[in-house]
Amino acid sequence: MARVLIPLADGCEELEAVTVIDLLRRAGIEVTVAGLKPGTVQASRGVQLVPDTTLDTALQHDYDMVVLPGGLPGATHLREDPRIIALLQKMAAAGRYTAAICAAPRVLAEAGVLQGKQATGYPGTLDGLSGIRVSSAPVVRDGKVLTSRGPGTAMDFALALIEALAGEEKRREVEAGLVR
Image (cartoon, rainbow, N blue to C red; front, side, top):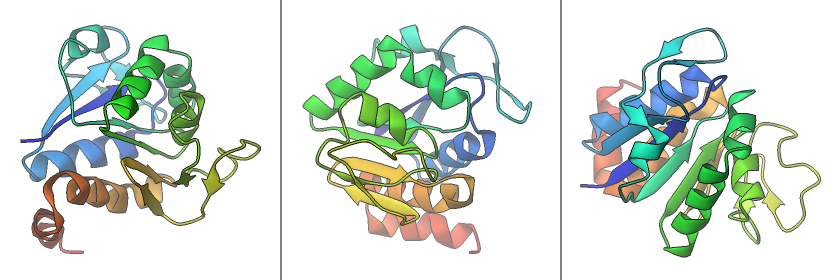
């Protein structure tokens, strides 16, 4: 079974975080939700999210994918955390999946993961960065890197993550249960 780490920071976009967590778990994927610090995470619209563990504890394990929810200032907190940057670089070097939505693809860019890749994000998020082919597609997969535009694309993003980790059949199974 695939293992996914989803780090949460105060100010994250709750719709993106919860959608990805929910759909991955529906697919039978093991998801660890880790707060950058102990305690609840206050998302961008005031929703309180309770992580499974702290990032320090979560980093003691290996994962097949790390997924960064967007939102502001959540994505900024992720970008400013050296543990997140080191994790993304380690995952990319090991040929594992990195994924981000909304403002969080900027974190992938800061870690060097998007260099030479095609990616998407919230409009303006990737502007002015060299070495990245910016797309306006809702979801972009370039090798082991998946990016998405924002809250409105969260379900499509989560389904793409399922397909990457568990295959097209599992994606269709989960999607059918959503009555899309």
